[in-house]
Amino acid sequence: MHHVEASELENQKRLFGTNGIRGLVNKELTPEFTARIAASIGTFFGHGQLLLGYDGRTSNIMLANAVSSGLVSTGCDVHDAGMAPTPCIQYAVKNHRMDGGVMITASHNPAEYNGIKVFGNDGVEISRPQEIKIENIFFGNQMRCVEWRDVGHVHVLSQTLDEYKRAVKEHVDIDAIRKKHYHVVVDPANGVGSLVTPYMLSELGCQVTTINANIDGTFPSRPPEPKPENLQDLVAAMKAIRADVGVAFDGDADRSIFVDETGEIQWGDRTFALIERDFLQTDRGTRIVTPVSSSQVIKDIAEEYGGKLVWTKVGSTVVSYTMKKLRAKLGGEENGGVFYGPHQPVRDGAMTTALILNIMAKTEQNLSQILNELPRYYLEKDKIECPNEKKQRVLEELIAEVRHLNPETVDGVKLWFAEKSAILIRPSGTEPIYRFYAEAKVKEEASALVREYKGKLHQIINS
Ligand code: MG
Image 1 (cartoon, protein in one colour):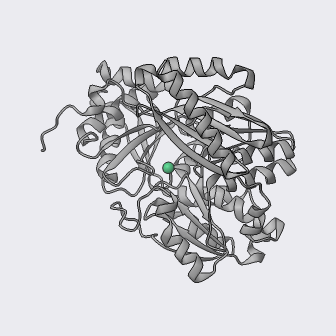
Image 2 (image 1 turned 180 degrees about the vertical axis):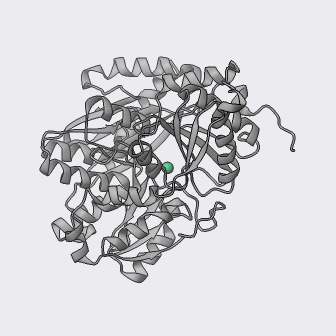
Image 3 (image 1 turned 90 degrees about the horizontal axis):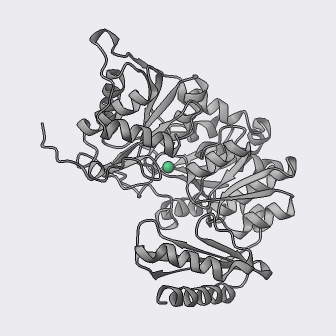
């Protein structure tokens, strides 16, 4: 056995971050620590039926076995669905009427990380108050340890990938897509996206070319975050093959970023706007849930097609929760997370891919043509240093100063101006800085907005 030191996560007295529990493999997330977390999760769920899944990282089986051990030690039964995308596991929790689920993934983080996400019986990540219950069980050492005769069972659940694929396809016009024989290039970053979308696309009559589609937890081809600088292989493949669409996933295939047939990367807010427009054309007046960090283009489409925008804090779980609370059917993030409520109110890369093809087939246009119909904005980013202890006062003073401009203050300060420009001023959650994101139809206008508000903030910080 290796020597285990109290991990960072334990010392902080908090396990869950904004996206579940994340840590360095065998430094923070050791088998021992993971089994104790799992016993806390099992205690929280009572004697429940829990689904277990994992992504393609090198520590997946090690941590899955630790989670499994911890869960059955509390009397829960484990249904092991194996390697799968996160949205597939979330769908399976609901579809198999489980009491909850655990996914072992570090999403888009580098290869040396792994993590644990916990889902409720509807497949949505548990809420912060529920996470606190699990943390209290963990730090209070109150894991239930059942008698020998009551140890839970581990079952293998083998059909979840097929069931998920079928469920996604139910939401699109299969015949219309099949007739088009689209050529699609898929780049799953050597992650679990390899297990679903390429096969689903074949079933939709597409010609499929994959790159980086052998599962490899060392991520040998590109980092698992689908940022433009990581998508150069996909862009090159699109230009060489002249396919109709390219799609790249993050490591657990809940986020998807598209490349059009000209080889241009289309950022997540643009593809989300496309889905938003299509959705509002048939379901006018519906609510669209999106974080304040989303582009102006989302607001333009909502205004043009009668959608009601609901702004949230930045983060995928808060979008899911807001959708559930308001019974909203569509949500989206600028980073390529689309939440399609009729399927499930969580980010889902395979669902997003199917929706984009559905829109292409319906409009009978190339992806670049449809996207060119959307308004274009220039984005300017900047930051300013601000000590953490000053952040709250700075925020309050900024809000007071801009009150006449009717700010949205759910997360930082967002302001909209005439000529459709906007700025978001937001304190970083991890660094002693404030960030600025300005958008305008003209580049100079976006830069001017950043300059103006950077000046204002500079004054407030130093006052
Ligand atoms: Mg992810």
